[in-house]
Image 1: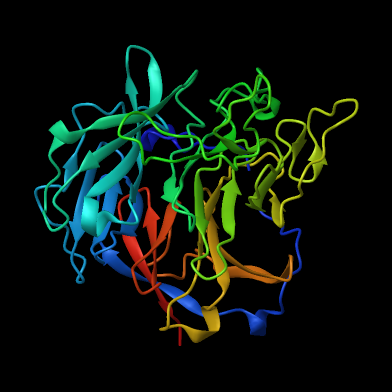
Image 2 (image 1 turned 45 degrees about the vertical axis):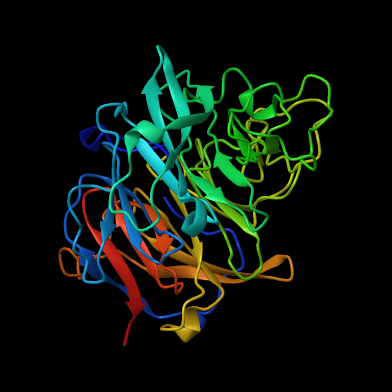
Length: 386
């Protein structure tokens, strides 16, 4: 994802023409956005801990608890503002709580810092599970990855149903992946990484990772050929891993990420050739893509709705576009998209403060009810319309 300079982001080139099975308008869930938090400093993620407490991240380096009425508690739960580098797509980008957080108090964050060059850090902290503050002295660096540029850093961390920690890594930036990181297995850039954080020093590589024992390959790799999987999520019912992969010149795509999958970048962008090669490897097509035809855009991966308040939305994967503000939905069943469409169109008819300007992340609470972060400050609750 590359977002506007004015808000410390750059945008990838992208507009919209869906190239997947589209449902009839009458079949689409009817939803709207309801203001939840009015103003934050570039909210990057909203999630919950295993105790059910909502947590919101701000790019400059703060993670804070949020009450049910949208009140953001102060002081922050975690404050890394003195360490985090905030520059374009750099900053505090992701947080994940250990599945056994209620017992062990471990949490993990993804952020950029200099040591001395720019790096992605995945660091562990430990806190009393019921505490409202994290002790910074408990920090343990788990993983670092050198970043050649200040864009395409990925940023998501999330535990899978298997208890392993997944880390989304972009291709490191510049245009067209000049060093071919997407197709190289000797680097972690442009990959979905899967590690075991059980050891108290560093991490372990799960024995069933697809590149374990492959000469010259990083065994941490779970999947490859991703340009910038800025946001990904696991469907809490099916366990499928959905990722929005930000495009270059023409296509934005949504992928279902599988073990050992190659999603084509930079050989392909979406389903189209980008830098074709002789004897290409086997590559997995996106489940959904839309054309932006050299205009500004950037797909924002979302979540599958598993709440109870919007029955018509159950099983739909919600995602958005950072540039246009559109909110999409698709339903993926039996290995294919059976319905899709635009669920929220940010037209001028919407009331100011009640329509997205630049979506940057989706999240859900413990009950599966969903939220949307807008990089320009607000966080919305997704509710039924009509």
